[in-house]
Image 1: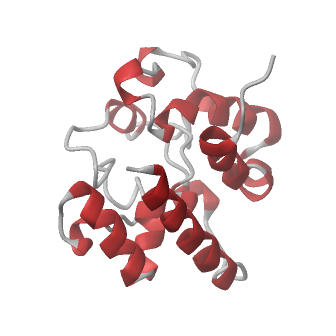
Image 2: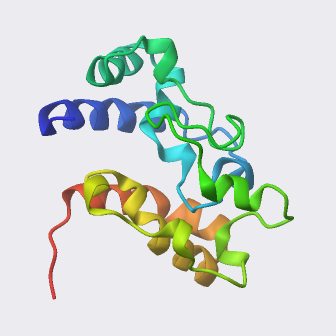
Length: 159
């Protein structure tokens, strides 16, 4: 996705989140087992804004209906822009854990980031899960989840 289109989608997302800010969110359900905040994802937000769905669909060359996502748990671990099955979801679905942060094997190979996917925010999974473990899911979701995506794409690295 070009930075110009990403900026456009970001602005659409900000407006949409502002309109929906008083709606109650089930953060346990809307946080993927891997720690991604589905409630912040543009593919999730696209279901509430046709213009956003059309813009994102154009990037992936699919129909707007195909790009709309209801969240990891509602989609059984499927993601509209990833054709493969999610190993993390398959691993955790037979447990009573909400996220990988609760697992004795955390962090494991399933959460490993890969260079060929470095532009995707999937690389924020470990950081999100560490913050969830430290703060608790609800506090992380309300206070940090949205800012992590912005920092990932727009922040500058410092030592």
